[in-house]
Image (cartoon, rainbow, N blue to C red; front, side, top):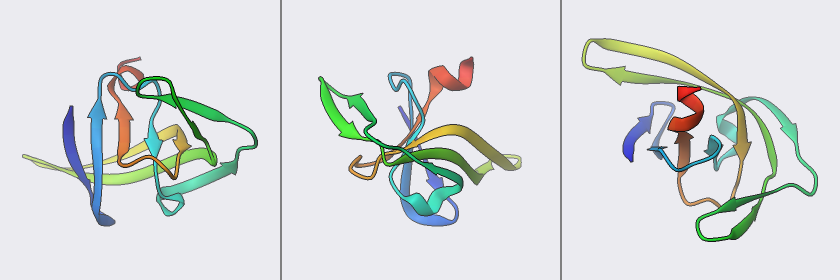
Length: 94
């Protein structure tokens, strides 16, 4: 796992996770496009089910050694009870 910082929300951590099956963010304010979910759950960790409040797109800017990169992630799950934001490296690869 690698950790990044969300520029617009400096106290929020983003982990790049090779085991995550979806991108997951905790705060609805991170979403630029958002659709509420009803009766949807996600399995995290060792068979723990957490409610999915919605899904949509998240846009953020990250700092690289040679400049900045604007990133937009689509089909991001909003999971309020998750302890940290996760970006799925497997989803990015595909």
